[in-house]
Image: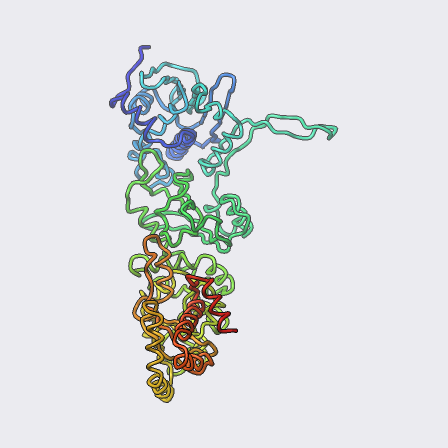
Length: 622
């Protein structure tokens, strides 16, 4: 029979199929198996409509290393000569799409067919020099063979096949830069089936070599057995009553290569505008590369049990990137390579529902198992806060009740819990931000606030204060930094006494400001420093901690807060300053630098000249 040419600009289009659409050569096996599964689906559907019993369906893989051939057989509905012509002779002509359109009755078996574009088959030519398809249509007596070496065309002849179904035979390319013979290796084939086609609903079988102990138990011998390579029914499709907790844990640890059990499991089967199943996990520990660009976020996306994307980032917002798991839907609009998705409302709807579901489960977790939730939050809470910060705080209403902060009360509290336990007459939510809970707890300002009977939220993530600024208030209570310029927690008597002292020390404060120059915006007295001789606060909207975070970013090195140096009038160092101002103005200036540097250290800012700081300490100790 004469060689026929492909239709639809065959050479150019086929070259596109092979070299451009598919980015990963190994998916060719996924495509062949998916087509075989579709053919069996059609056979099963047809057997239901014509009243004939279904047979035992199977997809068989056979590899011949000597002949360099890889064969995939199915006992599905098969194709006639005309269908071979139309489906394989015309690129982008899909028999599956035609079948769905002809049987658009809402039947699940017809609706689950995913091969809609008719190009997946041509991925075979990425690894094969020659492809042969032998197929016998259900209800027909004659089988036909379709053979092609690629762009040159194809030919169709009669062939022999006992039962209906299709056999695809690939003659693999010779090894070169790419070792195509790897696709004949038993373990490579088992891996590809497990990775891409593990949840195809029909058994995918292959003859494999297995080792077993010999009769004397001293050596091992090899035997060939037919083994089913795929699981068929995914764990997320099983009834919850049939799945144990340890089954979910084992699935997670194996699937996502984690040595630790998941901290939280979320599963759902949703029926509505878009039907999908999901099985999600919150890890117990953050992956080592979680906070790097190398970490791949996203969920595994399946369509009718076929892996479509390894990491579908569009299914989750970035702030939920710690969630691992799978989503399976037959309602997705796939593009022709089945590697990406069209911009479609189905995926958007799934993503919106997943976000809502996860946040709901986190809220329940916070209430039901507080200890476990707090452990989770110490590891992944910062990402939730970034979610609140992004988009100018648009997600704050969804997230604010999920935040827990360690406080000077000695435990984690939510903002709502903080407000519930507020001291009578307290109108503001006090917080302090820095890098370490212990350092924050010992800040002179925090100590002073606690001495007045107020609790302080201790915030240790870089993003904390930015989120607080966006939040502004909670239930009418404004946030106020314990490190702000004016805490306003003194009684009227204390304010008057402090003002009198400040008026009397006006010259000293001015001279200290002169000695420190542009390092500080103001020097003032404060009765809120406890046992500390000095402290540092910030004037204006840019706090000390926010300035530290911003200045750590490239190009922002010169950003700094407007520092206010606070001097404790009850500390012996204040008396020394008064004495030196009168007797030794040069040494007074050095004392001002010492007090300023000590105040910087209390808020976690290292001195620019440590050696000079040591000299100052020694001078005044001596």
